[in-house]
Image (cartoon, rainbow, N blue to C red):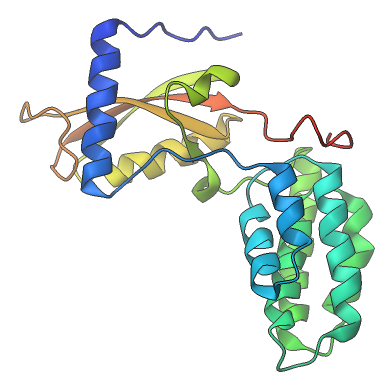
Length: 234
């Protein structure tokens, strides 16, 4: 099992200074970890827009929770009989299909097949795409995680997570490119979160957010997302 490198006080000061600089630039910010209970509550909202946003947040987030996907399936069952071609529920159902495809649970394939036969093109098209995502996630043995949903953590947030690896990124473009690269590499490493440690440039300008020749160090973590209050979570 890889051991997490110990951060010296100096590196901690550098990391804090980096996060302050990045936040000021508006290019990146630490994120709150998603809550299964919160997502379920949002799926139960009376608002079509809120239910849609909930499934948008679920899609590609790599959440392994039976209770969560059961709630998405329930929403599909309740919304499908009432949807019409010009209804905002078309977009809602499309996102519910994409969210259920994230699960990797082949038990939901018949539901997606039903949606793929819809006379409403937007629903059918996204359901077919969700079937492919479902197959890939099932083959991988875990919920689908898109690199854009990899979380950026503070040191405090990372305390409850399992350390996976540490990597360095170098780019002649903006620091944002390194952040994206770290997120992509984190998915490949089996992690769902990163913590940025420090960045520098060859010109010697420390914390060069927009400058060229950027080197950025980051730790990768696997963080639990399912809440203790969700006993059906995997």
